[in-house]
Length: 317
Image 1 (cartoon, rainbow, N blue to C red):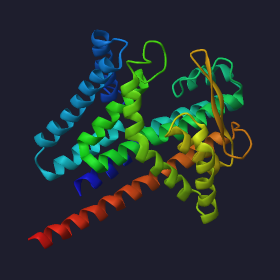
Image 2 (cartoon, rainbow, N blue to C red; image 1 turned 60 degrees about the vertical axis):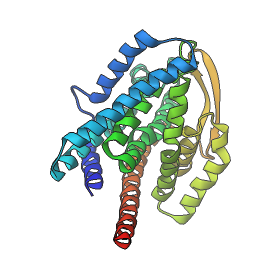
Image 3 (cartoon, helix red, strand yellow; image 1 turned 135 degrees about the vertical axis):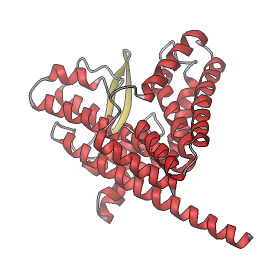
C-alpha cells in the first residue's frame, strides 16, 4: 500500500503546491543531459540510443538506490510521495493555461504568444488569439497525459524507479526528440522510447476523458471521435488524447502548425467549432477531472493486482 499512499500524497502535493520552485530535480536532470550531449552528440541513431540508455539507466538506478536506502515503511511512503510530487506537472500546466487565458481576455496577444512558448513547440509569432487558445488547449490535453497520467501510471507499475525513469524519458523527448537537422537521427531513440512509454497512459487518458463527460452518450461520443479522427494526427499518443479532449469539450482541434519553418498538418479532431478563449477554463477543468479519475482507476487497479497476488501467495503456502 505504500505505493498507493505515496501516489495519493504526491498528487495532493502537486495540486496544492505545483512544481518545486527551487532545485527542481527535473531541471537538474535536464542540465545533466545537456552537459552529456555536449560531449557525446553525433548525428547517428546509435549514439543517440546510447545517450538515452545512459541517462534513463541512471534515473532508474537512482530510484532503486533511494528505495533501498529508505528503510522504515513510513519513510518509503514519504519517498514515493516526494518523487511523485517532483515528476508531476498538472498544477503548473493549469497555471500556464490560465495565465494565457487571462492575457487573451485582456487583449494582450503579444504576452499570450510569449507565454504559450512555455507549452508548445510551434511558432506562435503569427498566431491569432483563437489560434493561441487552440495551441493552449492542445497542450493541456497532450501534456496532461504526459505530465500527469503517465507518471501516475508508471509510479503504480514500478514505484520510485518507474517515476524517475518515465520523467527521464519524457524530458529527453522534449529536449532532443525533434526532427530538426541536429536531432533527426540523434533524437530518434528518445522519441520512439517516449512513444512506447506513453502508449498505455495515453489510452488511459482517453478512457478517463470519456468517463469525465459524465454520461454514457458522452463517453460513447469521445470514443467514436478518437477512433475516427486520431489516425490523422502524426503522433500515436497525442492524436487520441487531443481527439478525446476535442470531443469532450465539443470543439475542433488540430489543423496546420508551423515547426521550425515547416508546416505540418495534424488533421481535424472533433466536430465542434474552433476553440476560443472561453474554452480555456473548460479545458483546465477537464484536465483536473481526468487527473483525478485516472488516479482513482490506477489506485483501484493496483489494489486488484495486490489482492490477486496475496491470494496466490496464500494458496502457494
